[in-house]
Length: 327
Image (cartoon, rainbow, N blue to C red; front, side, top):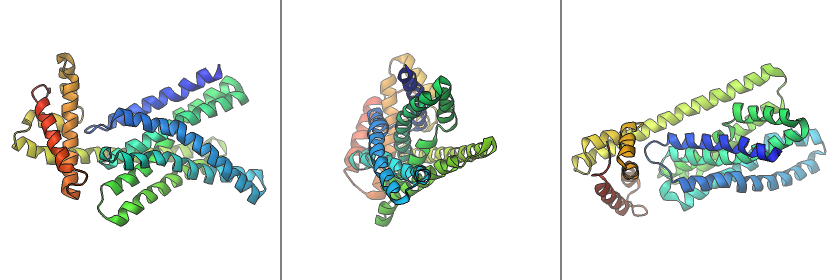
């Protein structure tokens, strides 16, 4: 019975938070199937890998320290951040190397890192909920739910987003040294943020110190949200830059351009829904977002992995869909 309650308590909020991250990707959506695989990796592969490696680290620390209290502190402050961020970060690395054409911007890195983190958090929460139920019954489970899902919900996606940023910086930079070092820096920032959270909670005494930790973490998350909004505005500027040329070339109309660079596109989406052309309209604006990014990559890196051919194909798709796309 406890498991049947713990699963939806953990996974329903995680899916909702994942949808919110997906929604933030306004101009060039990542494939839903790839995001689902990333979530699955975080929720299952990363959890299993982290459990195995954490056990190995724990045995090693105990052999060195010979003190259960110190081993517990080392586990929370060192083992968990190092191991968990490594396994979650592998999901981002796989997308970076195998699905490179989907990795176009800093925002993409944040999204893949965040989704991997939410998958991990969901499964970890199930384990914590069951553990608290065993110790304190339903009150223990729901108190833990309030803390892990209500108060500290954005922890794991926040940490792993730094790894995503690291790989995104590598993807969007021509400097070989930057390409190598950026993911490493991203990983260390993820570990550092994770370590701060775990270590401060280990030494929290009383509601006052807990409130301070919560305040600091939420301040960090809100600052990061501000950074995400800034990156969305940057992508909007990128679309304006590259799609303005397509208006001049006659590929799209001025009205289509304005809709493509708008934040919400509510009018076009509603008109498409009522007109029975929602998919055509959604695909049309998705292709425009992809076109802008590919033109930016062509300008920066040249014809890497066939950018010219991809751009030509995108223009063909846009031309075919333009008559049906709503504005």
